[in-house]
Amino acid sequence: MPQLGTLDGDLLTVATWQRIALAALPALTLAAFAALYAHGAYLALPLVMLMHFVVTVAYLHDVAHGSAGLDARATHWALFIVSVVVLQSGHSFRYTHLHHHAHCLEDDDLEGAPARASLLGALLCGPLYLPRLWRESFRKIRPARDRRWMVAELATALALALLALWLARWSSGPLVYVAMAWIGGWFYPLATAYLPHYKPGSKPLEQARTMRGAIVPALFMNLTYHLEHHLYPQVPTMNLRRLSRRLDPHFEARGLRPTQVY
Image 1 (cartoon, rainbow, N blue to C red):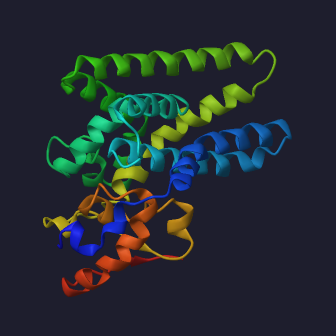
Image 2 (image 1 turned 30 degrees about the vertical axis):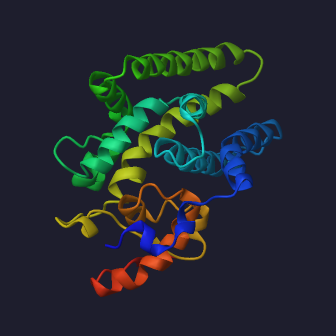
């Protein structure tokens, strides 16, 4: 595959307003969840929660890969704040995700392990998936500072869950959110490993999938361009669609056909 520089230099460029918008989306979807719950629109909550997870993962991807335009200190805080809101650990995610990129679907790739399982296997490993990633990260991360961040993230997530339980005497909204965030995490193996790496081959271009369309990729914040993301992880999420168009001739020359969706 070509070097990134030969595909045009604008692929690493994101306008300041775009960075701010992407960073704000997790807060906006959280606010939408609260507003809908307050107005009794309970049937809309799963859809809003899905979008909350999508925008959170999209932003954490950029932060983890250093493409969110943040310095080192801001990166730590972004990983912390954005992840604990969905009861997760941003520093654990960064470690296991970067390891996944460096050792994609190898024996020690814990993040990508569900891709080698059956559909049922990917679903069954859901409840223990994130705790196992946290444990693996804590065991292997070298900087003591990152381990302290991980402990802080775990403690804060637990504190938020307990706070939601305490607030239930006045409103069940926070507890409903915590329950949905916790259960939503069970689908990470399916959504972030099994489907993006469905039936992987032995060659680099066969280890991840790419989905093309006008609606689905936009709804999922360009995360469906998973092969492109693996080939050029430094490209910000917002530019993956542009990258995919420039890679089309190279994919075609190698006989690779993207999956077409709506």
